Length: 332
Image (cartoon, rainbow, N blue to C red; front, top):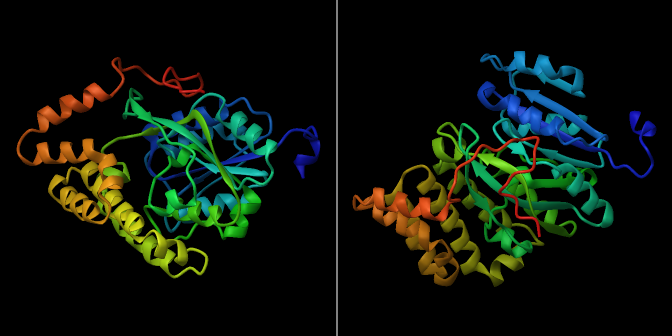
């Protein structure tokens, strides 16, 4: 076990990248992981049998990859679970092959989790980038509790780092979920042990036309309602659902509407927001700007809505370098 050769005080972190035909973005992802400069980092790449040149990229870095494979799998969850079963790190994470880590993310996560061995996972803020790596915006979260997760307050998956023992206790990813597989896992982890918000940007989530939140937007709502039914049947979660049903159900409809809007389906999104408003107006109105965008898009004012969104984004677009600190980081 090569962990025996690491200094006693150094934690080992395992990072997994699942990938399938993402050659356009894969190299940036790999560079962002290897560029963390963390000496105890184990890197695993699980490719689903790509035919687009991804293997050429993996071969260029294979001397720095701990283990990799390219073979057909049953989807993203299957690929990640395959990597998790190979991981030896005390702390584990996965980053998809179109996202990138920001500088120091691994070291920051390890430091926080070493300081509190009770933590099941930590999560930070993130930024969003386009297909070319240009900065789009910031994703700010907060010190969420279990109820927030149950009400479908989403955190950014690549900015999450987990304790491997907690993931194993939770039972890994449920491969029957294809869209909110991560959020389902966060809820299960949160029922086992505390989790913590780290107020720093740790990853960049890439938005592009082939991304699932755009190309398969309706699937996220379907998974949300499945999770709602699942929570209602869990002995430790059902009482929380019963006590906060309006907020949790509104959260499911609000999330469904959000992704429908990402998928350029404003009419369906407004129907989702209407259902959420009827259940819990105050909670739903946190998305008032999204509802405005949907309404303007529906009546032919999409240009005005797009102008408004540009005002909410950083004033100057810039390229994000995966192996350097991002200018959009919000360390506090």
